[in-house]
Image (cartoon, rainbow, N blue to C red; front, side, top):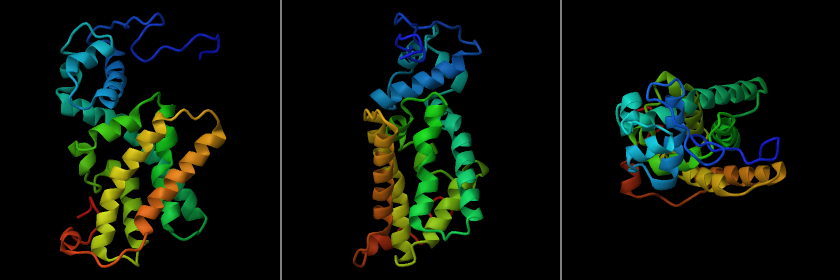
Length: 241
């Protein structure tokens, strides 16, 4: 609800429920398409018609997505890039605080640094569906196999490398396998969190802490000897080979 007691409008819609119509080259059009694309893909999947995204963004021109992003892949990559700088910056801040404390690199601490920004940063940037978007689009190359050597993934690379080293009781192949599986689990748990109606800070913190503990459990739970299929995955942190 807004301060005056009326319901706030969703991005790309007027207060009365009518689309906000902008021209294809309007300064606001690109941002509206990003928000509408994130929301529409989250709700209907990555194969949703691009013209439906344009309509949801209030665009008269059904080719507006192509005009701004070139293709469906370009739009998906741009939605990720919209949030990535702020997410990585927050992770770097948390890493710096951790290093200043001289505390050891525990799995729980590193998972917290990696995941906790996902609860707050997209929302602060006006997003309402980013986790659900990630769950739907996780097979896209921008998500399924990012090259962590790229500068834009610097904080994530540092955290994943340290997580790999923080699991000495697991074989190198099993560490790699679990770290690769971690992203799938993170996307699913965060999407579920985003769907929940959590009304108080205490409720949100309780669920957030539970999610973090589940991810830590995925990485640290001991198992018996793994078979050849796991060993074949290699023995380096994913995305850094």
